Image 1 (tube, rainbow, N blue to C red):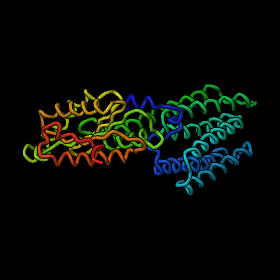
Image 2: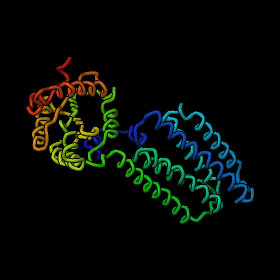
Image 3: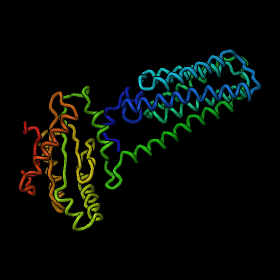
Image 4: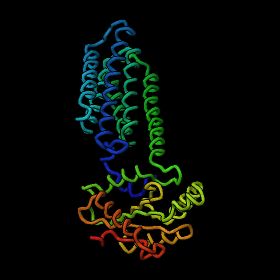
Length: 347
């Protein structure tokens, strides 16, 4: 479902991005779960030192790191609606440094292996909440931190095979978690009936690609497409036939959509189309092609608009919605010139 357009916009910012929309709610969720990782790590470390290792803390640094983890976890939970994405990344980097320091102090097999497992927690978080490049970045940082810790540690007795096995387990598990998260995301972004992107996915991409900072000279077109008399098909022929009509139209339309443009099911009997780099004449010709392909099933009404300078996604959507309303008011929607209305001409 990822479009060519999205791949073209890949840049360094995506490395540090959250997997889904970077809304305040999503950031708050990520901060909350990272706080849980910190507190869980502090509790497990305390129980391991006191019970598992008989209370033998090999270095003061252990207790210091436990205290720092507990403090960071508490702050994350208390201030989760105030912390930002850069702070979250700073905490992750600091934690990798802290775990690497603990590995440096872990001269013996048991504490060393148990400490390495905390890398596992961090990468599970990274692959679950961050973009794929972000997960890979923290995998690399984790390996670097581990190598440095082992290289400078004197008398490190943990077998190298054990360390490599745990390090490999951390990375592989993170990759599988990422795959699982990606599959779940795909299900949440795909319309189950037509296989097209759904409204949630479409709005997410539009807000990312058509944000205030993304104004360029490239032409952006948006169109709302409504199936006329679709209710009549459902009422007279049944909802199964209505579903077949939606699937058949999607199959007819999908091949004529350029790679890089996005056609999505907006909801019910409405679709929405986003194009980049097409002139208004080319965009209108594409809409005419969709109109012709739909004519064997039913007529459609279309409201479209070309993004103006300083227009946001919401501005463009309102313009298209107003144009669609005007198109549906037309007496003869089976004629192309009446069925497709340009919202930019409505004032």
